[in-house]
Image (cartoon, rainbow, N blue to C red):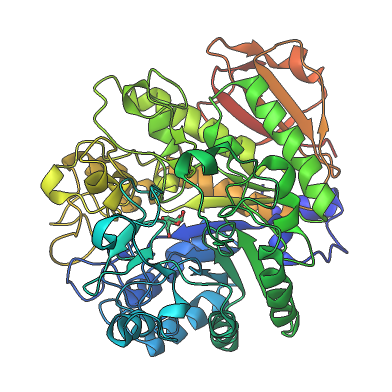
Length: 568
Ligand code: GLC
């Protein structure tokens, strides 16, 4: 059955909603996707060379993690120039080619904007260092005098998100704030030039045809740094109610209101999605149509593979999205967390290896990586497929992370010498960091880098990557890649109205929901098979996608999702 067969039955005509409301957005981590120039680092031309793969996947948009000039102190989230392509990754002309190739396949392009901090290699920061204390150039960042004899103690005891002190001393004795790595000085958002420059950046990429933006740590830009500065303990004790000195301040929305005018000055309007680790109740401020328009919701990513948790996450987030006039977002994996196939295959569901919580609050950080001898690969993959199919049926936008369509696992046992993530180094190895989900993709089952590039890969790929190669999965009906393609293809046609109706099932392990066009999704989160007739009251006959082995008779296997189309 094809989508065209389904379309008339489902009354798909007449839907005119903006593309981003129910999009499947595929995140590319450019340095690890495909390497066209054989230097071990993925590049822009590499992505373009895989445009057909992306087209065949059936996604609506690609989100590119930073590809700007960078010393890679934080995988590119340390940006040295916001309006250029890293020469290691290509040129602006290569970027234009990529946009053209994706647009030609009906795929929108979203780029990552990193406004909280620049790289210490940014010309503004170089200038600030050279210009010295009290200079206008320093005022674009957050410089302060230290305390104690000779000012040798940092201005405060604040801790950076990657561990260790949040202040770094420069040669003349002043200190600058870096909420993340030392090489990521925080910008001063009270400075009009900083604000004006980001507007210029948004226009620069919009003019080049970019369709939308992902806003990095959108809740951290504005700060109240009036003296005396509080201690870390005082900061931690303060409510995050819009007036916290560092996090989720109400005044950050003045920035986004200005950006909204930029977005809306284009036709079609450019879109944005906020990465904002804030209290749930405050997410709608970011997703507001007067602001960024959409915000990430990481609740599915933090949930165990468990029916009740999934039900609550969906219900709560649909309500929140409605409050802002936005649509919800759903994420199971991204470049900051342990891949969901691995999370679900660990004995501590939803936890990082070793039983530590996978999310560390405080500066809200998601930990990943580590060695986990008890990983059950098959269970992890089976649950991951079921969870993905559950997610792709939901109203709203699903954000997918490169490699999850291959069922790829985390590379947990990277050697310390090979690791790159500053979280690993700044925690002296206590946090394994995020490199394990950033290992270059396996395109073919053989070759020095499994088809990633001609030569080495910047993070070493394990031998078992061969089993997950895209080229092998392409021709295999029951592969994870085939499941993603089928589901994403169908989803294109099926995502019409944005409502969801829960339908009671007899089992606490089984969730069932229906969309306005009659499309139904049933997930058995339990291990035991369930009687499908009992669950669906015998009403649903046209199975259109299934996350595991075929249904025999009326028995839905354990840890499986099935999509049903309505009876004609
Ligand atoms: C975001 C990014 C993460 C990066 C951090 C600092 O959370 O997702 O990868 O390290 O911001 O820019």
